[in-house]
Image (cartoon, rainbow, N blue to C red; front, side, top):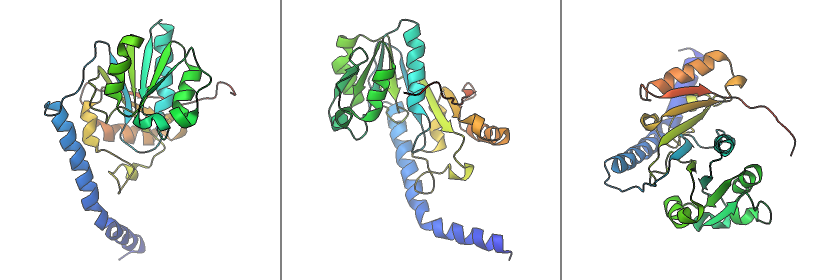
Amino acid sequence: MKMNSIVKVLKNTAFLPLFPISYTWEKIYQIRRFAYKTEIIKSHEFEVPVISIGNLTFGGTGKTPFTMWISRFFNDLDKKVVILTRGYKGKLEHKSGIIRSSNKFGHNPFEYGDEPLLMARRLDKTSIIVGKRRADNLKYYFNKERPDIVLLDDGHQHLKIKRSLNIVLFDCLIPMKSYKVAPLGYMREGMGALADADVIIMGRSDQVPTKKVDLLKEELKKYSSKDCIFAKIGYRPTGLY
C-alpha cells in the first residue's frame, strides 16, 4: 500500500467516532426545518418584506458587510430599514435593545455587541434591534419603527420569522473538504438546507482560482432549487475609519 493511501485510511479512521455526532446533528436540523415547513411549529409573519442574510457554516462569511450593503441600497431608495441581529456576547443578547442610526454614539459595545454598533455608525435610516428572540423583539418594536424592509442578520437557521427572500453566503476561501457538518467540518447545517435559498452568494471569489469557484458552484447546485440565483462578490478597501 502506498504511503499516501495509508495516511488517508488513518485519517478516515481517526474521524470515524465523529460520524454519529455529525449525522445526528444534521438530522436534528432537518427535522427542525421540516417542522417549520409543515407548520408543526408556527412562525411569525409580518406585513413588510423580510430578507434573511445567512450561511450554513460557522465563522464569518461576510454577512455583516453584506447586510450593511443591502441596507444602504434600500436607504438610497428612501426606505426605512430595521435590522434584526443577535448582538453576540453583548449583555442584551438574551434580552432586547435598539440602536437608531440617528443616535450613533453613547452606546456600550459590552451591552449591544460590537457588530450592532458598527452597523449603526455606518448606516442611515436604519434601526438595529438586538437580542436572540428576534420574532418577539420585532413584534415589540414594529409599531414604533414602522419599517419598510426588515433584514434578518444571520437568519437562515432562524425559522421563527417568515421571510420574503433567503440569501445564503459562502466563503470561497474555505477548503472544499471542510463542507461537512460539525464536528467533521465547518457546517452547522447540512447542504439540504440550500433548498430554501433564493440567492446564493459566493464571497471572496476574487481571492481564489476560477476553477475553485466553479467547483463550489457545481457542488451547491446539487442541493439548491433550479430557480436559485448565484452571484459572486469580492471586497476592496474604501477608506480608513
